[in-house]
Amino acid sequence: MLKRKSKRDHGKIKLSNYFKEFKEGDKVTVIRELSVQPKFPKNIQGRTGIVNNKKGSSYVVKIKDLNKEKTYIIHPVHLRGLK
Image (cartoon, rainbow, N blue to C red; front, side, top):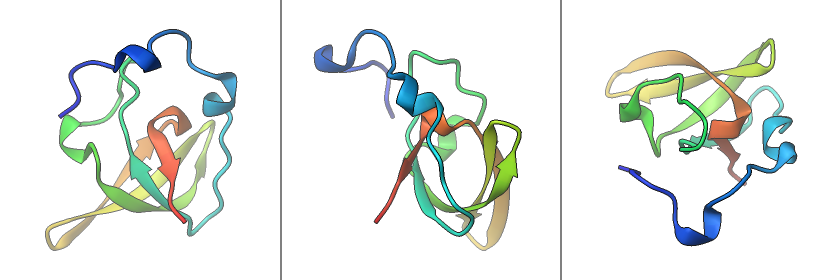
């Protein structure tokens, strides 16, 4: 679990991280940005999911938790795209 940033990552967050664009069906990884207050449970840190749709400036992401599929609304600062 991430508790702090590495020395190299300290400082301001790039504005491009706030305005990341994902399409419906894209695979993403949830990586907490520690300098921004996280608005989601810590137990989804490092999980991968699929973008369902966009809700305001955030994205609705489906993440499989054991046998259940759960949906979370996550800001793009906390998401990284997978290839």
